[in-house]
Image 1: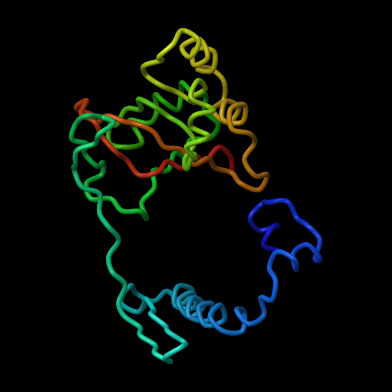
Image 2 (image 1 turned 60 degrees about the vertical axis):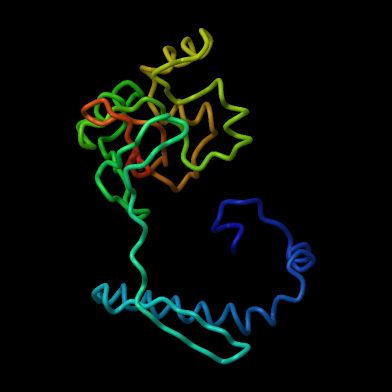
Amino acid sequence: MRAWNYHIDQTSRHKVKMIAGRIIPAIATTTAMITGAVCMEMYKLVLGLGKADFCSSNINLATMTFQFFEPEKPGEAQKEWDDIEMADVTPVPPRFTCWDKVTVDKGSLTLRQFLDIFPEVHYGCKILDLHKSGMTSSEATALANKPLYTEYPFTPAVKEFIDGNMDKPLLQVYTEIYGEPPANRNFLCLEGSFTTADDEPAKVPPIRYIFRH
């Protein structure tokens, strides 16, 4: 069930038992306790309760201590020096958190249309560089010559690659570089480098591009 849920290769029950080992004690203790605490919070969400009714938990079954307390606010993005940009980078919008997303819901778009429409969607910000969200360092190295987009191609081959993709559907370009997204997903998660409407270096929340409904 976990393999199915996370879109990874499924395997036999025997192999799972070999990998997981004697997992019953964990299921019957810590995992059960945490699952129960999380489910309590989910009930609150379904009931539509206010933020003040939600709790974080600190539980130690060894000493039988249970602490429930008001969750801390998520960290807020601040204007700060960025070693890659070699400049102070401004968060847009100000003080956004990890819960924020930039949603681009304009139907199927070409790469050129996506770049043109982004300033209208997000406070006039312009895209300088665009790639898949959550890339590992090995992926970044292997695909360095195949960005979704960059304003400053560093070789003629990269410029030719980007120019050839500008009028293709963004979903097609993404698939050709990174592979197809899961069949049941209707959005792509993207990130990159940006400037504000005043051409100052900017950082924005992760982008969710909805390519179909």
